[in-house]
Amino acid sequence: MTDDVNGDFERVVALLGGALHAVSAQFTTIWFPVQIGLIAIAAAIGFGTMLLARRGNFSAIGAAWPAVARQLLTAVLANLGLVVFVLIVAAIRGAMLALLPPSRSYLLGVSVSLATAWVVISILAALIRNHFVNRVVAISAWTIAALSILGLLHDTTHWLDSVAVVIGGLRISLLLLMKTAGLLLLTLWAAGATSNFIDRRVRSSTDLTPSIQVLITKLIRLTLITFAILIVLSSVGIDLSVLAIFSGAVGVGVGFGLQRIVSNLVSGIILLADKSIKPGDVITVGDTFGWVDTMGGRYTSVVVRDGREILIPNEDLVTQRVINWSHSNERVRLDVDFGVSYASDPHAVRELAVAAALKVPRVLARPEPVCHLTKFDDFSLDFILRFWIDDPVEGVTNVRGAVMLALWDAFKREGIEIPFPVREVRFGDGARVVVQPPAPPANQGVG
Image (cartoon, rainbow, N blue to C red; front, side, top):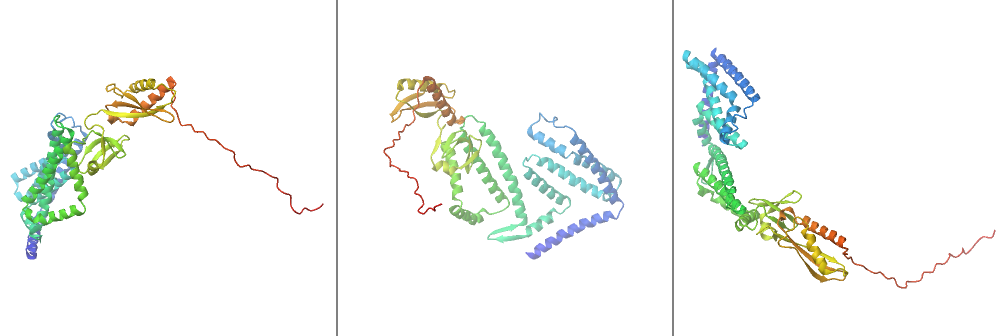
C-alpha cells in the first residue's frame, strides 16, 4: 500500500509541476505580464464597483420579494465586484482569442473559470442561512471546482483514497472521511431546515395541543436526523453491520454513565405524550413556582416570577411531586387563614371577609368566595377564607397578600380586633438579699 501511495503522490506532484511549468513558460513571454496587468485592472474596476455598491441603498429593491429571492439578491450584490471582474476579463479574453492563439490568454481563461465558479457557488450557498455551514460548503465546492479546472481532480481523489487504514472490516481513507464529513454537514443541515419548516407548520395548527405539537416536532426532528446519518453512511459505502461493535459500546456507556441522560429523554417523551405538563402551564416543583416556557429533550425550562429561567430535568418532573396549577383549567382556589377576638360577631365576620375578598380585582365572583369558622382557639375565633382566581400565571402570593390587606382594612374600619397571645408573668416571694457595709481594716495606724 505504501508503494501505491507514493506513486499517486508522485503523479499529483508531477501534475502540479507540469502546471507550474506551463505558467513559467508563460512567464518567459511578454504576454504573461500583459495578462497579469489586465487581470489587475479588471480587479481594480471590480473592487471600485463593490465599494460603490456598498454605499448605495439596495435594501428597498427586493423588499416585497419572497425570502429566497431576497437571499439570492443579497448574494449577487455581495459578489457584484467579482461579477464585474468576470465580465471584463471574459470580454478581454474573447477579443484576444479572436486575434491571437489561445496560449496568449491562458491565465485570463483560468482566472475567469475560477472566479465564475466562486460566484455561482457563493450565490447558491447563500440559500444556507447557517454561516458556518455556508462557508464550509462554499469553500469545499470551490476547491473541487478549482481542482477540476486545473485538471487535478481525478489524481487528487485517487491519492486521497489510497491513504487509508483498515479497522476490522472497515477501510477508512482520507477521501472517505472528507466525503462523509461533507455529506453529513449537508444532510444534517437539510434535516434541520426541514424539521424547522415542519415545526412552524405544526405550531400554527390550532387543532393540536401545545404538548402534542412539541412531541410531533421532536419525533420528526429525531427521525430526520437518524435517516440523514443512515443515508450518508450508506452512500459512502460503509457497511452498517460493521458498526455493531460501536452500538455495543454505546450500550455499555448507557448502562454505566448515560442512564440519567436516557432517563431524561424518555421522561421528556412521556411528559409530552400524557400531556400532564405542557408549555404555558403554571407549576410548582419543590420551591420553584413559575410557568413552563419550553420543553426540551433533556430538560424543561420554567420561568419564575423574578425573570430567572430554571432548567428542571425531565426525570424530576416524572418522579417528584409536581403541582400543576393549570392542568385541566386555569381556575385555582386559594385559602387565607385568620382569627378574630371572641368579642366579635362570627356571622358579621364571615360576611365582611367575603365582601373584602370580592373587592380584589383578580378574585372571581363565580364561584363566590366563602368563609367558614374552623376552630375555637385559646385566644381567637379561627376562620378560613376561600376564593378563586383564573390567572395563576400572574402569581398566587401577590393576590393572597392583596386579600389579606383587604381583610385588615375592613377589620380596622369595623373595629374588629385581630387578637394576639397575652401571657401573664407573676413573681412570687423571692430570696431576701441583705446588704451590709464592709468591715473596717483589722489594723489601723494611730495618728
